[in-house]
Image: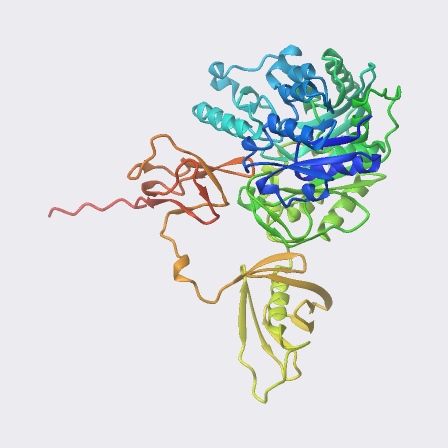
Length: 630
């Protein structure tokens, strides 16, 4: 029997595996990079081993270091989690060669299925060769052969862009998975992303634990997932189960795995088989009442599965909370997660707690919140309400987007589900939440009362001068009153019921609303709104020249456009350089056509948010008028 498990991963999935191990009486070992020295998964493990360095290539992608860590800590088994080396056959062999139990499929099955190119060949599907792609094949998808999670993926709609996207995808895949192989396949527009969860033992039993729909995606990475996939006709379901089971049996699969399809026009197009546990596995666990990690451990110990899986019940929906700004190209965010509290009664899988820092080196997912209910409609409503009441103080997150998505009529209509949801609806979904002006009033009054008692100090015989505070785009004007309260003059129609430094009650149109207010420097969280206090006077040191390109996030410059130099002419939208942050590459483009007058970026340079990368002097927008020679 397995006594001690090392998890060759970090964050949320490491914590999730540790939870099951504790329930089963199994000791746990964490590995951690220098950037993760204080991370939750390290604190929760029974023992931890340092992997020197911070970049994944130096740490979590070093199979030799992880095997050595397992042996040093006395572990007798290794669980790979997902991402990193979870689909690396050489790592699986290294684990077993060291005399350790590998909690995953046989290396031969990984080799057959983990590479998308070889998996397609095994199933008789030949990927396109990049050199053979023509205009008639567009759009196409450039995709990493190893790994998943949306990394190393690019949609190409113009043939001229194919070569640079192949290079970018390969670089991103190599950074995330240690394998830069990419391939090209036809891109099916606006299909549904449907997958089948498999669990197989070493005795020939194959469980198909239903379907999941993962169509709501950004950057080809899933955002909201649910089980079962709604609205699929019985014949199509039968086909999905049969093809998935056949794929597993063809390679002698053992353990947990997922077969993914793109469903369009009533047809299922095979995408890939992920030879690991999926991020979205909690929705399957909730519907089937199973613990997939416990079953992985049991299968790894050689135990047989029961002949049939348990019966499903109800519906489950999971949302991924990310530290990112959907309104700014999904830019990842960093900083301290000051306060993180999810209402009780739902499942939360996370690698963070209040007070933890969010760094630049890894995926920006904070947590997965999963609910289970008798029906899909009830599950959507419950999850939206739970997220709305979740306390998230710190960097910008996608929480408001998730709530709006779950309540969107198009998402509620199961017949309208497809992967183009955010392309169609993102502008509307990222509009500022209603009530921001009143949250700003509460923030201003909470600040004003700080140090002055419940409603402030004494009063004067003269009418007090009006005060002004600005939060984001909301200007608030108010004045103290003789009774120690406040009168709000802008926005109009607001009556102050009570104001303290921590809580404000306002009456608007006859309705009293409560605002809990907490400030962290210039950032204020007021009644669920995240606001930034605007200084009354601009600091001259913060002024930048027109055309300045500032780093949108902290990260590392990985590439600069070939041959780019000061003095070059550039065009609006032209990629100038690439930043890597949180395992994703982000292009920095020319804001306008003009001349590159400064270039401060160089490959390998680490930059903080707001750092000056380059300056483009815009060309005059009007043509000079010729002088009349007369």
